[in-house]
Picture 1 (tube, rainbow, N blue to C red):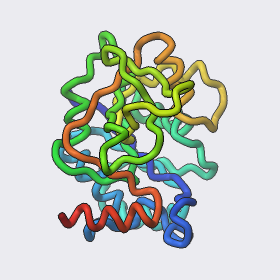
Picture 2: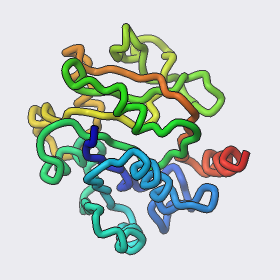
Picture 3: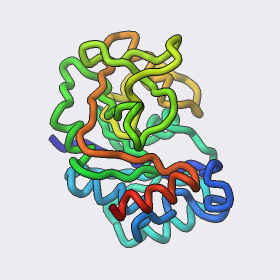
Picture 4: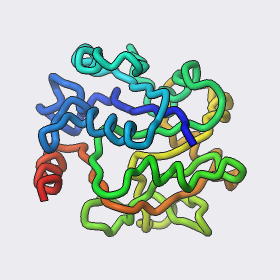
Length: 227
């Protein structure tokens, strides 16, 4: 199964502080490789096509870095559209049907996250399949995002914690984005629609994942990747 992929690389990286002030977060390096190249390597292993990358903050740096890869689609956002708004615009490239999305600010070990999703996605019953990590795993942090009920997603609220955290990789059918008339909005608004209609599922991941969103996480990921 081959489906399109959107790599989210447009964020301002405000949590990175000085490290992200003068470059896109996706251009930071972990293990001697830029985060955007980590994401592209994962995409290549899973044979994703076409691939679209959105840009915003210091976008000229990303554009120069990616210029030699003519097959990539670049979606420059003069206004940061957030994840939902960015995917809505990308539909002009992808057309109809499900797409995969991958956050650029993460690193992975073990089984390819996109391959896991492709193997498990069933469009007959799913409009979203999110790759999840156990909240209590050493490399995750925060109160968690979701419960799983026979594979279906359920939000953490009103519970204070949940057993699974979203890793930033998913396959999703974007058709219901047409019901959201804003231009700037989070993917959460689409997820909520799909959860309400029992079409949103979660897949506990194999392997390991690390979010790289802060200077501390970046430094820890360097050590983790070297192990």
